[in-house]
Image 1 (cartoon, helix red, strand yellow):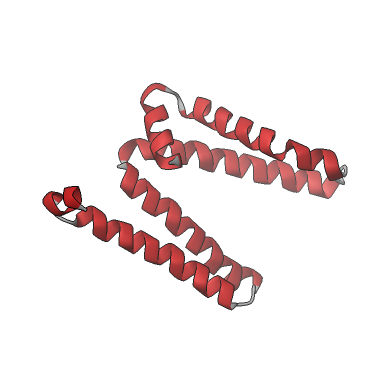
Image 2 (cartoon, one colour):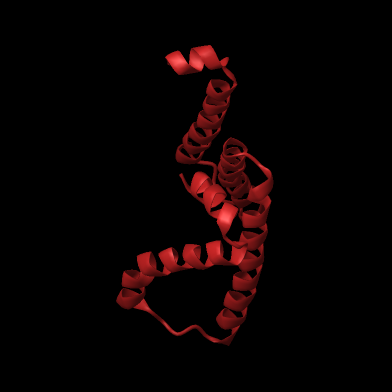
Length: 130
C-alpha cells in the first residue's frame, strides 16, 4: 500500500511534499507517546539527533525520487529486503543474538517476497483465474 501510494503521489508531487506528509503522519501517531515521557536530551544526544535526522532526511528524499524509476512491485521487494538487511546489520554490527523469532521473521519476509514474485511472474491467464 505504501509503495503504491508513493508511486501515485510521485506523479503529481515533489519528493519534499511526500516527505512532509510522511513526517506529518509520523508526528501525529507518535505525539501521545511524546506526552507520556518526554525528556530533554543532553548536548551529545542533540548532536546525534541532528546527524540522524539529516541522514534520514536525505535517504528518504532519494528513496522517493528513486521510486519514480521502478514499478510498484519492484519497489515493494526493495522495501521488504530493507528489513532483512537491517536485521543482518544488527547481528553483524551490534552483536544482536540470533533468536528463533529473528529467523522466523526473516523467513516470513523473504518467503512472502518470493511468493509474491512467483505469483507476479505467472502467465496472465492463470493469474486472472486465481
